[in-house]
Amino acid sequence: MPLTDPHDDHLPLEGSSTAAPGAGGDPGAGAPEPGATLPEPESEPGLPEPIPPTPDGSDAGEPVDGPPEPEPVLPEPVRQRIVALTAAVLPGLPADEVPVPLRRVAKFAPNRRARLGGSVIAAQLTADPLFRQRVTARVLTDAGDLGAAVVEGTAPAAADPVEVAALAYLVRPKGWRELIDASGAAVRAEVDSAVVAELVREAEQRATRAEHDRAVARVEADKLRDELARVREELGQLREENRQLQRGLRETQARERRATELLATERGRAARAAADSDAELRRARARLAEAEAAAGVAKASAKEARSVDDARLWLLLETIGQAAVGLRRELALDPVDKLPADFVADAFTDAPAAAQGGPAARARDTDDPARLDQLLALPRAHLVVDGYNVTKRGFGEMSLEQQRKRLITGLGGIAAQTGDEVTVVFDGAERMHGLPPAPRGVRVLFSRKGETADELIRRLVRAEPPGRPVVVVSSDREVADGVRRHGAYPLGADSLLRRLARS
Picture 1: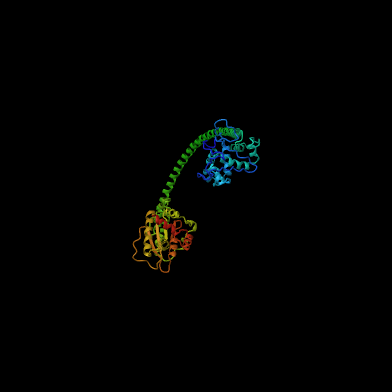
Picture 2: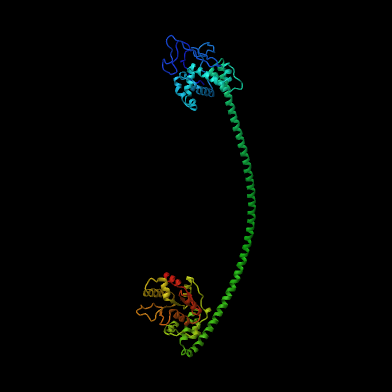
């Protein structure tokens, strides 16, 4: 491609009477005085004399056989190299030899001169042959032997075709267009070679990727074959398991038929056992009737001798009365007005030691909160509460009167719900006066002078007949150990407090 569009503004030959404007760009700045001639440009030693341009813009070394030929089409690398060579020598030119448009470009940094002033440099090289000759002289000095060869119209075989074309364009020896055309052909050949190399490299990359894809496909195929073999093996195992399950189902059905037959047999045996039980029950009822008749005979002779022992016996029978109603009829024991705890409240002396029951006859110690409900569910159970021990643990911020009232009211609810006998014991040298009436089923006792509530609780436990469930609520370890030795069930105060809170 041409450096720039050619135009007809050419400088006249040096030494002519009409000179171009000076290097400063001002009209008349470099003009000679009237009647003076321009000096010939000095050439550097060892360099060819600059060839003045002809009036038609062509170089003197080329024959002029007609109109000037247009600028050749330069390959892009050649054009860039020409601009780079000009930009490199531009600062070395005298200021008056630098065209006005390029003076500012000459001040640019080397790395910016060719990039930013390339178009202006190309235009000046095309339009100003004198400037091109000055640039050529500097470039040939730097080119050395290669520049001399280009001036002679030859190009070394090993030389860079781009460099040869750029020098040929600037020097313009005979046949310089052929040198540029040859350089363009070489550049195009290099570009084509680069394109072919790139295509070959891409083809190799595609082949490599294709080979990799084939290898991956083979691996995937192997995996699929292995997976197919595994699935077939699992299918065989499932079929075998299915056959085993079917055999197991048939065996289970056979066992179910046998179990049905055994169940029918056992039902027949159960029916026969029920018939035998009914017959035995009838015989037991007959014996019970005989026992009741005999008890009626003994009733008359034993009635006059009943006392506190009769009350204990009646209460013991009442404890197991739901399971021994016939025995109570046999002995003909009538309910009494007083219970053992009433006798303890009235008497100050301890009950005889012979009335004590063995520890094995009572329940064992437990802290389970649900244990209180289980014990109160026993027939004719007796609940004995250490009053102040419970109230001071549960609501000690109240006064003693309020504590007693709250506890007695709560125990009344328990007595109403369970129907059990409830006794609450408080410490006190004498009976308190002005107390509200106790709820039904709740007995309120105060220890007398010289006696503690703990001692009164132990006497209440000893007064009960062996076998009756007696529950003592106290967090006092000494009280719990004492009543346990007499067969009672000791429970902590927290169990009763939680029971009252739930009520």
